[in-house]
Image (cartoon, chains in turn green, brown):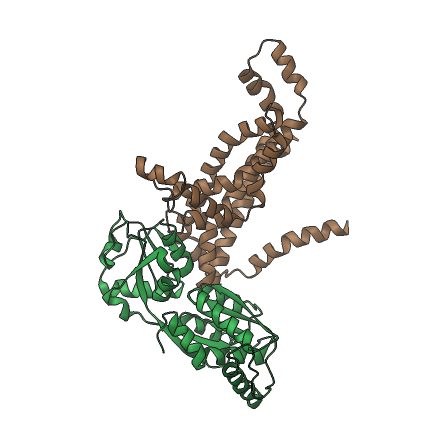
Length: 257
Length: 252
């Protein structure tokens, strides 16, 4: 079985390289991966994984990638409750551990990217946020991720390092919910991943801070033990780990593991 | 008989599942934790305030829909029930776009009065009232339409003012509808999640109501989520059962 999977994966990698234009046909006709797969991925992967999914589908005609993006802890919980997912990509090892502990994932997870936090403010910075100390001021509206989700855990860590006690107005359930509040101008500042700042475009501005390096989130990915479409699940993981996948993720602002 | 039993089982078995899975050993310590008390208190206060708002504005609105002489009443009636079919999260987004700091109305509240509603307890009450009001309006309007208007006409011919007629004749005759609507409205407000987390955010002691606490607890500590759910379940059932016996049961 493992050999077969490896062969499939290699074939997929080949197919991925071959399809560079509409008229080109891959030199060999590999046993293509088909069918639907469901990928549970951390909210911060929304844009980059959607792109990877479309590329994967193009490289594997007859395949269809469905995504469920949410906070990693919510996804881990859904997987442990038996959600029919094929692949889990978490924004932190802690949430991957939640599913390896229960045996929902038996393969060893691979770290595929790293991400760090950035301060994000609405365009024009109306709240005049300049650094982490501003997050302690009660008169500024601040949004953070809840501690249960990886971006919240990372935020807690940077505030500890910076010796700042933040005064948040809301603790959101995932990083995209935080970003939405910034985009709508409802908060003056927030902490999100640098990739989210990049994905949000010019509606928001990112501000670097020194302590960001103290909380680097490793993103692990793994196929699920009971994946309904195991072959395609493995193929998708391999695609994410392939050079093409890494390149797309790097373009989205993720750091290499 | 069988369909009725299936219906009953369908409604009750999930609740039984909650009780069966409850971590009874750690229940007391979880139950009396300050977080639970805080969330429960906030839930009860907000749901009750939201119900008061719904009563103040919902009963007159129901009267307008049932008796008022307004053009396009049918269309208006349909519009009023929109929050019923609207996913609560969408309701929350709509509230943000109108009452948020950059919202259509909210920007003036912020500029002129320095009032910002998102992420406040007031925001929770507003979100709950928005979602729950249609329940009250529909129920009161139904009662008003079923009530015999001739009593009101008789009161009017005897010289009663419109307000006196409403207070002494109309309101008592539709009281069961008002009480049923109030209970429904309160129950809906107590369980409100989507609009609340979207519009009011989530901060312990300020906007974290029980449903939000359950949702967040579920992500790390499912046992705590079950305990919170049972607390909310018991409180709601207790209040509803108490009210039913006292008012609804007696009135019908």
